Image (tube, rainbow, N blue to C red; front, side, top):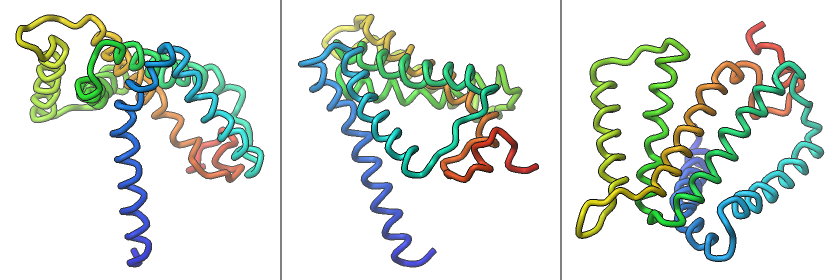
Length: 193
């Protein structure tokens, strides 16, 4: 990779990490003026408008009709369940704790992939799953002078499970759809045909 390409990559990664990390605090601020569903709708109205403009400019082809039901399910799980659940949880759960609970998405994704995609997990992988679940449980009971269960944390766990289901369901589609606007990659045919 050229030196300028590497610098561009580092800048892009830094911006991504800063924006992702600040999202949890931004949600808390947004919840002062909007309800959980309203905030999610506002965020995705802006994102949808941006995507529509991009799709029109690049002449992005429509997905295959046979894939639409699963794409709608993925959208519901990965966007509606995830964002409304996260927003609803952050009404009562601090932003830092919410970000740690959401960090369980890879664990739920792994477990769902083992169950539904027949993927294998090593002993070290199972240990990581157990440690992660213990961490989520500790964060979910609260961080105060005494231990108490914070019911709003369940919304965030639901958000993490929804996002994990989105990732597992999307895996078979990754061979048919990419970020490219090439008609071949969006036609519903496998890339390796």
